[in-house]
Amino acid sequence: MSHDGQLNAFTASWLTQVSFTPPLVALGVRKDSHSLVMLQRGRVFTVNLLGKEQKPVAEHFVKPATTIGEKLKDVPYRPGKTGAPVLTDAIAFFECEVREIANQHGDHALVIGEVVEAGVHRDEPSLTLMDTGWHYGG
Image (cartoon, rainbow, N blue to C red; front, side, top):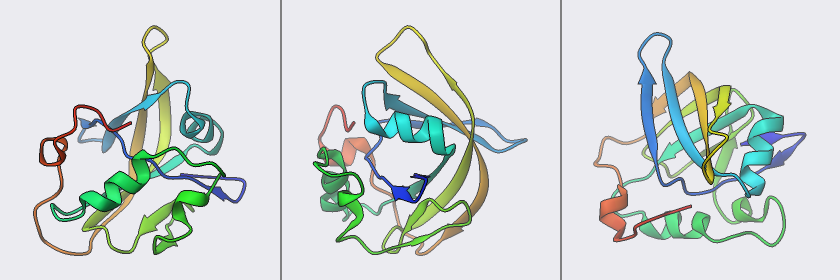
C-alpha cells in the first residue's frame, strides 16, 4: 500500500473475490495495525500473489516492522499504477483502489477494493495458507 510517499506491506490471512462487475476483492486487516491506517488514508493496495516456493517472502511480511517502510527495503519491487508496490518476484498481482472499509464489531476490518490493474509474471501454483502450515498470517 502507499500513502504520502510511504510504502507498507504485510501478509494477509484472507482474501476473497466479492464481485465480477466491477471486479472487487475483500481483504481482512487487523484493526490495531498500521496497515489499516495506511489503507484508510492512502486508499490503494496491491495484492502480490506468491508461488508455492516463496514461503520465506510471506514470512518476511508477517513480522512487524520497527520502522515504517522497512519491510520493503530488501525486497525488489516497482511502483504500480496506483503507486502501491508490485513485488518483482511475485507470480502475479492486482492493484486495487479502496471502495469500502467495513466491520465495526470484530478485531479485523474488511477492506473492499476494486481491481484497477493486474498482471501475471509467471504461470505457476500460488502459495496458500494451507501450504505454510500457519493458522493465521496477519
